[in-house]
Image (cartoon, rainbow, N blue to C red):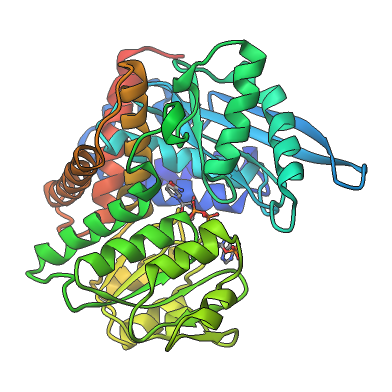
Length: 448
Ligand code: NDP
């Protein structure tokens, strides 16, 4: 074991002991630390002043009780989280997730990833994440509203335009942001539009924010294809999930000439050999708030499956856009055997560490989430710019800025990988480029 290997193993061992029972957080940190070995070899000063230990320790972790009353007048109690991970580059920025699988470790993994992702956007935003183990599925609109109001009744004191700016994530879309913003405005008695992003268009929201993560993932994917002299035109694409990210990844991929051959939800997957009817999918998911089975009932040529996996489909490109660890090493091998040559993560950490290794060994072009799905938070930062200047930009202008940001993230990840002798390894490129900017800011700002 080299001295650097030993040093990094030391950081990781300490992290495991101090953060027991948080496997997703361990996984996210392990990947970044592995990439940093070559940085520390070249520039040992990045380990000065306890920088690595400080980077892995959130600046603040808030856990709170969220009591609310259901439609039958029963009192329910959930747990709320906000992890303010790193504010060296700007106010904490990152979404809120409402899903029964949420716990502190999940929020810490997401907050940790967010630091590097936000750094890669080139915009002045730090990293944070939050959420609750509340399950929005099957809840009435009144229950969702009362939950959001109770959640904000604690969260409001920890956030603010210059402090911490939450947004949506799994289970938190425009409706929930509306309820959260309403309660914030009532509590602080101010219309502080810059406190949340993903807002409605008439009260401070930005055009193109809804589409941004999915569109951005496809812009990044397109750059990966272009780098190998290929294009999405005529390509077959698998998109997992059917939420916000998936819907707009499907829409943009098809706009660029691809055929999306399948999508999914947590119950099953849908095969669409002739492509996806995006308007029907939006109607089912955004307006009717129904399951993907409703899409199959109303579409022609689509079939629903609960056996096997969406990763069994034959395709050229795979875009996992649902949730963490949804694609394992066996899935990765199947994808490669079925012709997939490009994978970009619309979701956060959807590929297990083993799956990433399989892609790496097979020399598949692989875009990690912190680079490929950064378009959502980047457009949130554009929403903050519009709020600060009391302005609102056109869809085309905002989309053009998003497109440029994604192309730039790709370029930075590609060039950084090459600079460190790891040509084509966008995981290493994104981790190092995201890290050095935050690390330089932390070193300049002293031990805090
Ligand atoms: P949504 O809640 O809109 O959609 C989530 C989708 O993923 C649904 O289709 C859901 O299916 C599926 N899903 C959720 N959990 C599971 C699970 N355990 N197993 C299988 N499928 C699951 O969320 P988003 O589209 O906003 O987020 C998707 C991913 O993208 C997440 O990883 C998120 O962190 C990431 N992301 C989101 C951004 C954004 O701007 N929204 C920005 C950057 C990253 P079902 O309906 O059955 O639960």
